[in-house]
Structure formats: structure tokens, C-alpha cells
Image 1 (spheres, one colour):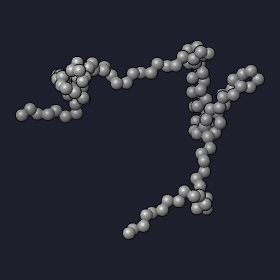
Image 2 (cartoon, helix red, strand yellow):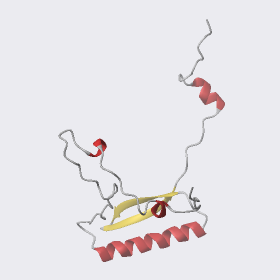
Image 3 (cartoon, helix red, strand yellow):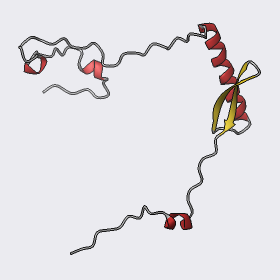
Image 4 (cartoon, one colour):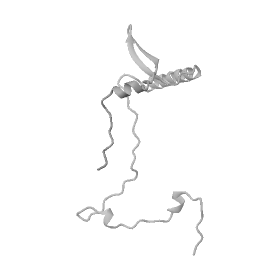
Length: 120
């Protein structure tokens, strides 16, 4: 019996493996279905009607600088709000405030009370 080597990658283990065509690879008519090369297709970046690639890269760099600046100030949770002000587009970071959890008195007033079934 051959010794099994450890810590091999998947590609190393299947280097000489050739899968045999069986009924699983055929259609109902008996014709062989083609094997897809890869299941995931990379999504192409959306091109904007208004932004050139250079302008889009410049905006990405500025947003990254803003993110680093906010991080240094201790602001981690924020949302970006876009608005039109005096003919200019403004993107402003707004601190994200999570909803406060309900207190015990608020929980008892709600009608979403779950009851356990009675034993018979």
C-alpha cells in the first residue's frame, strides 16, 4: 500500500485524475452536456453615463481619504449622504446611530408575546 502524503493542495491531489462520463453528464436525450469552465463569472464594473473612469478613480481616492480621516477621529459607523447644494453635488458623512434596544417596560406593552403550549 502506498504512503499517503499529507498537506497536499486539492490541485496536487487531482493532477492525474480524469473523470469518466456517466449518466450524470448526459441530457435526457443522451447527448453529453458541456462542463462549465467555472461557476462564477467576474462581474464587470458598471460604467456610469456621467463619470469617466478617471473621475471615478479620483472620487474613490477621495472617499478613501475621508474614511481614513474619520477613522483617525474615532468615527467608525457612518453613512454617506449625497445632496445637491447650489448646483454642486455634496457627499457628506453622517454618523450612524444604532437603534436603542427596547426596555423591559416597552417589551411588555407589545402584543408579540409568545406562549409555550400547555402539556396535555
